[in-house]
Image 1 (cartoon, rainbow, N blue to C red):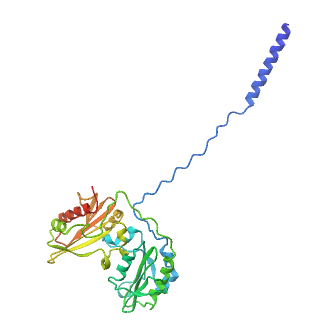
Image 2: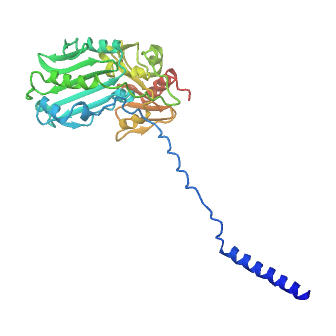
Image 3: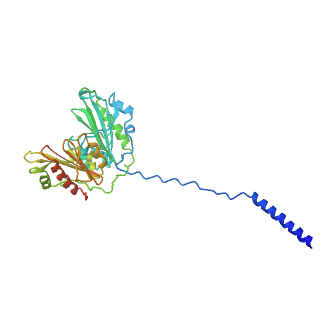
Length: 346
């Protein structure tokens, strides 16, 4: 009996060793990890309006077409002045193209083409029949296509399509030889491209945003102009409309852009004001050597040596300027009036 117990114990011991050996040969648990999810791409922060016209200057007028206008033309950047209004088209997302022969004076040739998005017929016709006095219709190109000439010399063109309006200038010195049909050739090329474009991209509206203006009264009343600047008996000399439009076909109205120029009834002086909602990012381009910061107006401001006060507020740009008799304090007082009028609550 004792021998039997010993045998059973031995068998159990052997079985335990066998099982322990098998356990040793079982691979350990495998830990798997999923690859880390990529971080989401941050949404770009828009600070200025992208071009809304879905074509590039190179595709609008290819090199071979540029050569048909005149020899020696090459692309260059569209120009701007220190004036706020020179940025109106950019703010609304217009495509601005330029070519030049690099010469000066009587030998200069500069060609500019602007394609503006969502041009209203009223704005187009006001421009067409304004300072240029209309144009010569070219129905073979389009129902609303016109060339414009000075003493039968090609000067430019305008046209309107379902989504866009376009204008061009051929600024040629007297020594420049232009083909007699240079304007029609360029019109045909540009119209052919623009007429086939899709609708413009979206119009950017910042937050907060200035409401802007659509009249001189929307910038400052005559009483406010006189009280803030001391300009005696001011009156509107010109405003941002018609032949004095500060944008292509008044497209600055899409964002509330407007400008006005007041003069004294007795010729004692002048002052001007302009607003460009969403135009704050363009303002630094007007800052030149000698400009000084001005505190207490808008969110930031600077005064240029020639007496142009530039104010940034709610992503917008306000600019006021007077003749030499208008002081810095008077410009600041007018700018504060304008800011209230255009919706700045800061």
